[in-house]
Image 1 (cartoon, rainbow, N blue to C red):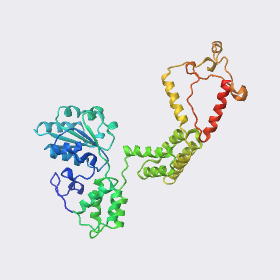
Image 2 (image 1 turned 90 degrees about the vertical axis):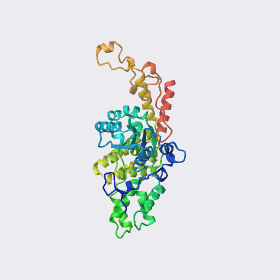
Image 3 (image 1 turned 45 degrees about the vertical axis):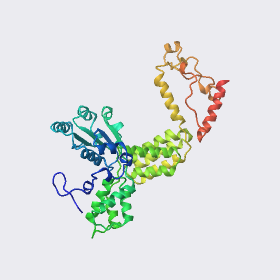
Image 4 (image 1 turned 180 degrees about the vertical axis):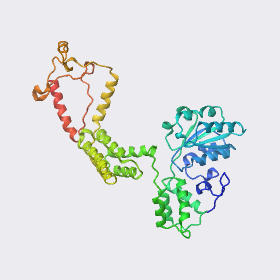
Length: 424
């Protein structure tokens, strides 16, 4: 395997670094940003500098694009990692930038790991042009970065590389590595790399190191991939995208898709307890009174997991997910609750009608507390027809509109009967 020297003069340079493209035409993927006449390509090729945030999954080219921008603009390239750096490091970059006539690009990897105060430290130097800021993040900038910082930088969204694009990168690398690597095994490696070019190249290096006589076998590939954990950031946007997909699959009555997303999350390392809590939420929000057994089954699944742990308890969660997916659906209570909460917040401190107040003392009774209250059990059919239980200004408010699905259809019929009695 051919190795270049790194910036410190050491001979070894990881394949992912030695393969880094040196011009825009060599970059694989991100055609929505780097295609002909696309703004980012034009900016890089013309050397027109501007601060930017590069948002995308690992191994999609964020560092490469920042370095290409610096090279084409003849700019100094400074790099900080938000994991290991602080405000002191930013100040040192500022001092070095002020000592040079050429522009400085400050590339901040994992910029989302800086807190809001640390992010504020960039603002005056971005404003006065001391350096051009290029931040790389795997997290949604809207949630993780200051609005002030976002307003001074363009956000470019990088996409995971397709399997075809990863295969192109792999085969380009194989020109520098003397390996007998069958195409069917190459495709397995690419699929396991989950859109991450760096992952492909790092795994290729491992395979090269452990191969016998330069031959990649299925056994070797399996052994290498077993120690390669799938990317799953439990705090990242991919996590929330997947739980959203699970929830929407249940809501959409697709048990197969719901099981797939459940297994994706479990396989990726998500805490089953978190999923169990979300499944309980699904039962309440999307199944509701159309099938009250859904909540019971979701609660039991969470309890089973606590008793048995993994993997047996995960099957109970899977059973709950399937049941909820095929159950009758209703969000009527969920909507009613939100509407009632809005009224509670917006209508002020409305007084409880006198007839509904408790009257534990003689004075309260004399003031009319509880007067004319109709005890429902003493009324015909246990229902006080025409009675009002709202504050006067909200009288006749209606929040709950049951669907005609599952048990709620029976509830709807019951409420219609009571409504007719109220009108008599």
